[in-house]
Image 1 (tube, rainbow, N blue to C red):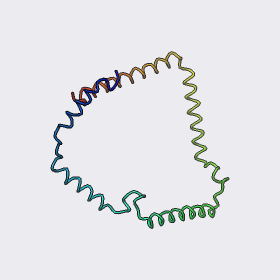
Image 2: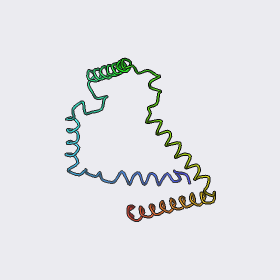
Image 3: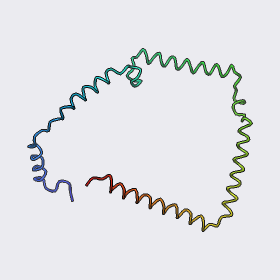
Image 4: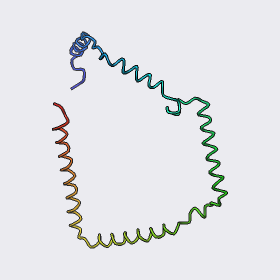
Length: 148
């Protein structure tokens, strides 16, 4: 079916909608809009978005941030941090690696000893539970939320 099958119908609907009277806004709407505009105007510049800050404040912030970056780089180089020291791993991290490799080894041993049919059954059960939960959620939504 084409969208403009009958041009007379479109003209009829257009004419009927134009003949409807304008609806008045609620009386409290004007007051709420004006209060929201006043609150927005009363917001200090430092609490608004960065592009609404005064140009001098934006420039000062960028200079301060750049100076902080340079100071941190200088502090790092004066503290003796080098690429070699950064790539060395701490002792506690080596302990975590040992624990992680042990857990992975145990998991692979368990995985090899469980029959494939059990894995397929577990995956199927999870999928059936997911589909059932999705259906239950959709039914609850249609029952309690959607107004007919």
